[in-house]
Image (cartoon, rainbow over all chains, first blue to last red; front, side, top):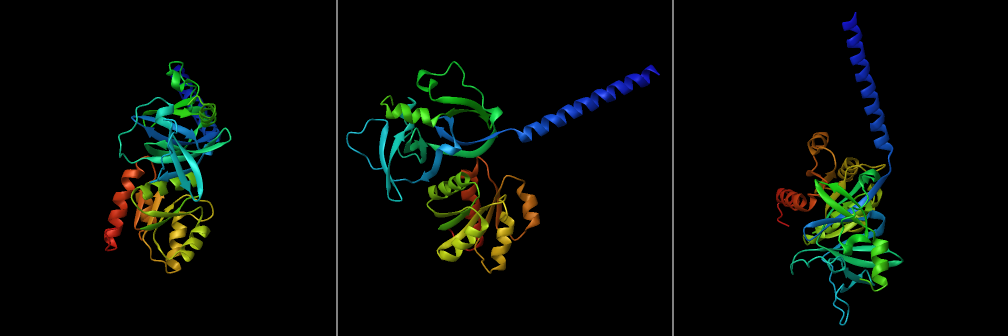
Length: 176
Length: 123
């Protein structure tokens, strides 16, 4: 009889565990998602929230503007509209990519400003659960501290999520 | 080569387009099957269609079947987040089916080259 009771207890435990797991799965499906444009700068992966990015441009001809600051690469013509191209490497105090390496320009909007943003490679556009984006660690370098809104892991690599509103607002204030 | 990219997720379509433009192709973007059909009818220079599978109303496979029914014989590559083999079994006439993931920039050029060699072109 006691053996039967033990067997029943084990079965009940299993059922409870299965139900808890099943409930967890349902919660996972319902949780808020966030779209991220993940890109590479040097050896690091970063991301902007998808709603901030309007276009992904390859082979964009960037025209140098004499006298512009180091963080401004130049301007591009996007179907007749002239937009600036910001060199994100410089803003984040990362080493420049090798000359001649293929790269992309993200056309982003933040803090009331529209501009191109030079990145090395666009890795992916993904929808991830909001819960996967963790708060930024306290150990971030000074150049990143104010502009990082979160971190996550994607394809076993750390991805730093940047706040384009803060980045552009800092840039417009001349802090870039 | 001029390629029609069909994706209801405009940023994903932008990414696919940017990968293709990085290869030297020009792209036309459409956000659904109806817009894709309109763009194909309006632009005779389009030589290939690359479409996402999971789209509302008209899926990538449905779009492919509709185009073939209309007599459009352009090479057609399906992008999916699912298992490609199952989709190819479902529609064997597809020229290729590619997983749409972070590896797309590497996988897509190879698949396009294979598909175009099957059509007797190296572009």
